Amino acid sequence: MAGDNQDVGGQLNIHPMDQFVIHPLFGDGPVHWYTPTNVTLWLGVAIAAIVLLMVLATRGRAVVPSRGQSVAEIIYSFVRGMIVDITGEDGLKYFPYIMTLFLLILFTNVLGLLPYSFTVTSHIGVTGVLAMAVFTAVTVLGFVKNGGKFLKIFWISEAPLALRPILAIIEIISYFVRPVSHSIRLAGNMMAGHAVIKVFAGFAAALAFYTPLGVGLIGPVVAIMAIYGLELLVVVIQAYVFTILTCVYLNDALHPGH
Amino acid sequence: MASETTNDAGQVADAAAHAGESVGMPQLDFSTFPNQIFWLVLSLIVVYFIVAKVILPRIGGVIEERHSVISDYIGQAADFKKQAEKAEADYEAALKEARSSAQAIAAETKAEIQKELDKAVAKADAEIGAKTAESEAAIAVIRESAVENVREVATVTAGEIVSALMPSVSDDAAVAKAITARMKG
Image (cartoon, rainbow over all chains, first blue to last red; front, side):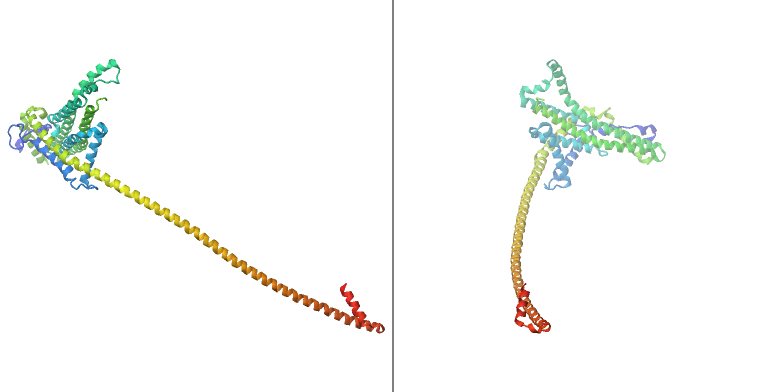
């Protein structure tokens, strides 16, 4: 033990990004596409949590709901209300997929706040796939449902005629930037908050080491508590934001006439 | 405390050594992308089927059932309210009827009492009339006899006075005649 700490500067050798490393669950081999990794583990835990809350807690099908069933119903009504508000009743056809997105993102986000856990949604590879799936689906759906009329979302008929081509270019660029912003917003939020917590945890370790009786620990620990509260808010809001943007994009495909 | 943190720091250093192969952000280690994508897509499919086959039908059904139960209860409550209103109306009608019959009874009773009273008053009046007539008759008799007595006394006294003053012209019949004339006047 003492040998590890010969270099006192090592106490401030903080690795806030180590928590995001993907490693195999068993052994130390290379990460193939099929290797069970910590991604697999935490996606599995998220699915287990979804089943626990949304399936097991609602098995009573009670008219007067239990606490667990109330929470499940609140989530259901929340997502359903979001779809109806933004896309109208015809968007309810896509309720299952949007609910899937919301549940999986919400639970991986929240579970990522557990100490020693791994946040699946902090990976741009994961959120990128989610965002590209939404982007592709919305684009295909837009053309299938509206044919050439789908292109109207780039042609703002309310604007003066001279401005329309310029606006069309801006609209097209912003349309193709959507999956990028959609995915980076989620991954970036997840990564940044968790990294900040790790940095403060590193400070706590260092200050505990350098100050008498480790009293210096108090400052960073209080800061971690505050950031943790904020992060709890952020993970829920980001799951909400990802879902609501999916609804907004879906609305473009269903009703392209702005 | 210090030894604990040392321990932690040791673990961190260990982990860092393991992570040595990925430089910078693990998010940009593209060699792990196939792994992430595979497991993510698998999870999405699993969750999609759980959501579509179990969660949405179940919760949607429960919420719908609750709505129908609540609307049933609201319908029942409306029925009960209607019944209560009807009962109240019946009660009001009964009260009104009772009040009017009470008034009728009171008026009837009053009329009866008035009739008896009138009868009693008439009877009393008649009795009083009879008594008055009787008394008047008695008074008349007394008055007559009193006049008779006065006449007698006057006749006797006047006769005595005349015979005492002028014994020569004593005439009882003339005295009586004079007295009668005087008393008439």
